[in-house]
Amino acid sequence: MIPTNPKKRQRVPHHSTSTRHPSSADLTRSDSSQKLRRSNSNASFNDGVFVRRATPAVSSSFNDATTADVILRLYVDHTTPFAADDSAGEDDVQIYLHSDVLRRSKYFAALLSDRWQNPNLNNGVDSKNNNSSNCSRFICLSFGVSANKPNSISNHETVLELLYTDNFSSVINNVSTALDLLPVALELLFEDCVKACVRFIEAVPWTDEEEKRVIETIPFLREEESRELLSRIAAEDDSCEDMLHGLILVAIHNHPNMAFVKAFVAKLLRDFSSRESARRVLERAFDETLKIVKESLEEYSSPDFRGDHNETEAIQRLNLHTAMTNGRHLLWLVERMVELRVADNAVKKWSEQPAFTADLQRAIRDDAWRNIVPGLPGILMKSTCKLANAVAAGTILAARQVRMKLVKDWLPVLIVCKDNASPLLPSHKTLYLELEQTFLRIISTLPMSDSQELLQQCLSFSTKNVDDCPHLVTAFNTWFRRATQPPQADDDDG
Image 1: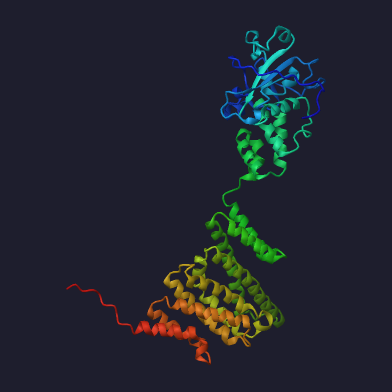
Image 2: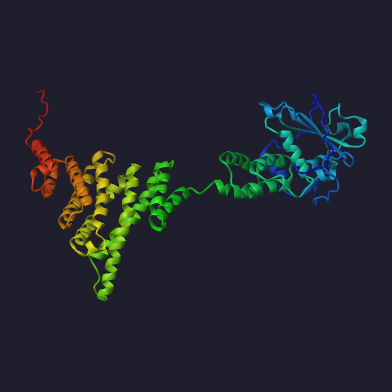
């Protein structure tokens, strides 16, 4: 609480009474009625009519019995079900207040207006506390607070004390306090306090638990008050996918610590709740990156020689570097798609690239790439190997036509890579052997006529020593065994 008059707060024991006192619940029973009452933030009641008021110049202090003209009894309403344990011990509090200060709250402005004044009602005070010596000198009011919220009495006292100041920052200095006081300020229609709480909440970070409380509070705020809070926790429908796509682009294109950022974005993709959203984001990035690689190789394979020779050579180098750089990005995207089991469409698109594979073969046959981007064939064949392995393992269930076209388009590239790599790097040798084995496994899943055509192209897998290519021997033995197998006769009951 803010510093107050040193006089001790007057407390009285709680006494049950049959009288139903006016309470905050009476004015906050529905959201619509509360928002209606809050439509004019700086108005107060005077004879039942809203009148614009300035903040009173306060010369008296909170709970100062010598200058007060109002006695307010705060009591815990135990008729509320599921009362919180924290409310025990603070059932009843009597506070000395000032009517001109209380009118900063529209609730008390209404209660103190002539329309509500009725001496026969004793201003809603228990008969025990409504002695003549008090009520001849004071306006006596009662206010019931919820029993199912912890520290309810204390929070109401704090908000009442804030009526006496315009400096809320000494009290509203953390999110928890602001969230404790905001419902009370809304209940009492204390607009300045509501604004101070909302302004603080929207300006600072929240814990997860505090965010839940903010979400629960938002329905009780006006639209203009809740707008900033809502913009912080609610986004447009496509914002998650746009965010993920943006993160992928930063990770693969712009960030200097690319490896660390790629690993972090990969984790975000793994942990993302919607697999379909992750699929769409990765496919979008895959299509964009594949397009760049294809266009770069197409321009390299079909150069425009009309310009200066040096300029043409520089452009060719740029095309190869562009293909290489984006080939690496493409491999990372393929790895993520296979990992998340969302590479179905990527396999289909990879199997529909006759022009791309033809350009790649032309580029590999040209010796220029060896000194400029020696890793280009290997990086693109790694993507092919990742997708083909997923198909052969059943991680991706590809249709027969897709399986056949995948091998048919990329098998010639593999053969050209092996024939034009001299000397063959150890890493490339391992990669190409793995791809040979994978292609032969996929061929074994095709109809006999398709596998016959493709196996003939695989003779280049053979080596000087037949024992060094058991995968090729096994593939042909399997095909001949199936070819010589007697046809399955249909059952004939007749």
